[in-house]
Image (tube, rainbow, N blue to C red; front, side):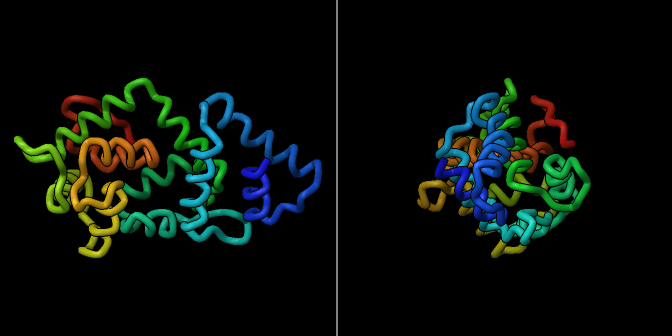
Length: 196
């Protein structure tokens, strides 16, 4: 109920019994079908709110990518379109939540994350450096400017130790599964990733 109250208040929904049913019904699919926990949904909501949704509760592509230090490159636009299936050039929290949950449930998702990590790190190392992350992105897009690259690196460096370990990389992709598409150019020789 606390989660639904947060979603309702950020989307300017008046708290009534009817609005509670509408919001809870719309999120039922995420909790029941995809097994999303309330904690996971709250974390995604926190990230979504950081994307500066408008008064209708919608986020545009440039705001979506800005929190990761990325701009709206052609690849990022394709990834955003996965969530924006209504072609409104913006997405709702529900679309973001369902899209992330759906990607996590794909049978090969964990294996693809492991393959991406192996392809991004230098041979003989166990971590990904800032330079290696930038190099990995070059196969699919122009890496962001230095400050954007640092922001993206910090997103992946979960434990703030200035390197991306396997655990950091996998945890970040579990949190933001759509970001696996950033590494498609590196891993499509072994595992095929379709960018919608």
